[in-house]
Image 1 (tube, rainbow, N blue to C red):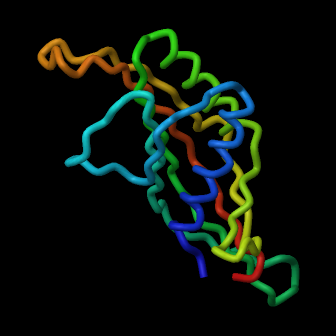
Image 2 (cartoon, rainbow, N blue to C red):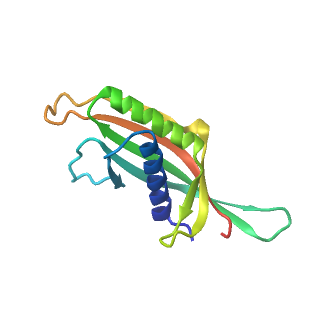
Length: 152
């Protein structure tokens, strides 16, 4: 059975490895977003929304593969515009080139997630001038994924 928890965790884990290979170290990570928590840069939150389910039948084979459409959003909070822009570019590259392996707690591969390149969007937001004590820049990168579970 499909699990957004495992999908979100897979994106976070593989994105963390990718960003560390690019030199992004000592980042604080979260899954989802807790409005009551204090955000301290550098901070990354990974969110995943369900967009529906498709079933396809492969030829005359009664085996049904299950595909779930997901909307992934990664929010980053950094200390400067330059760092926010750079990490947002790296996250966009990750979403464009990486195939995500969905694994359970025992490291068994349950399925894969593939992004739809044309749906990748990235935006930068400057700090709010009304909150002088909160001067972090925000970057948002989002895309649509297809989560494929070969055994339904």
